[in-house]
Image (cartoon, rainbow over all chains, first blue to last red; front, side, top):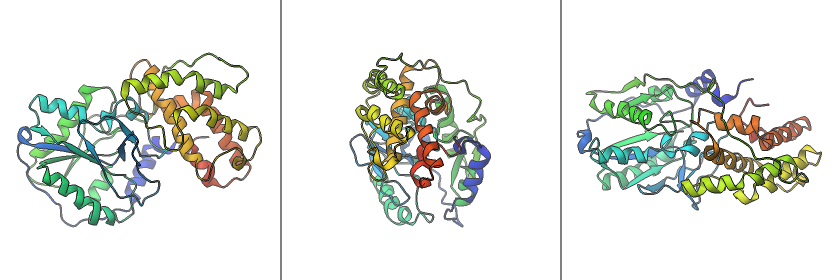
Length: 156
Length: 208
């Protein structure tokens, strides 16, 4: 038997069958040029700062953690055994490319790195209603208050 | 995952055929990470969506070079090899923590408790019932999470060369005494008809 997380066909079958809300319309807009844009990261890697409460097991924890741009004391709260955690152990940027964004900002490729970034847990209820109706809009408002122009979404 | 993005009408998606856990593809490879980010940001130029573009480089979960990571010699032959090994690796874990200023150990136990936790798995392998060796209710999964994380973090400190996909997981379960004793304990519990919810998540699905 193959190891689930390494089995590409099994992972694709899982992705195709996982329940997700399906939207009829695409929320598409055109942002300002990248070299003028403020960029934030939103990750579903369930990152949190060391010593924090972190995320619960199961699919009922829809809260998000605020990650200040300077914070590197980050813990991986995605607890599944079925993915490769060695990459994050070696380099947080493989999940949360905060250092790369800082460097792109210093080189004027992007306008600015947001002061705050955000982490959710990827394991959510089938409808994702809690994030859609509660913590998602709240997080989006935080980014709007900080005048974020572009959001980079990453998972694990 | 491309299938999810398609069904949800996500405005701009860079589909990366990388192993789960590696969103930017390659740890400790700035150049590659920049290429992935540039490809993602290029999507901002698209005039209409939804758009899904495939990153041209794929990374396989299998077939990479194994991790080259030396294990310490036996220090105390009165201890089980797994317990002795975990104690012997504590200095490497501490160095990794000092260098990175972060750890993901701590879901159920601390780094200092790793050898003691492994001793509990030794007792299961030697015939004691799992609920008599000192695992509080529903704590075994989190304990193994912390043991594996302890080893994976110190492996990244000790390893020579790049960290390939799944290399630390394979090193832990196939190459260390700790991984081996956990797999043995898992098999013992399965053979003794312990409820699957107790032992199944102690290793990735499909591992024996």
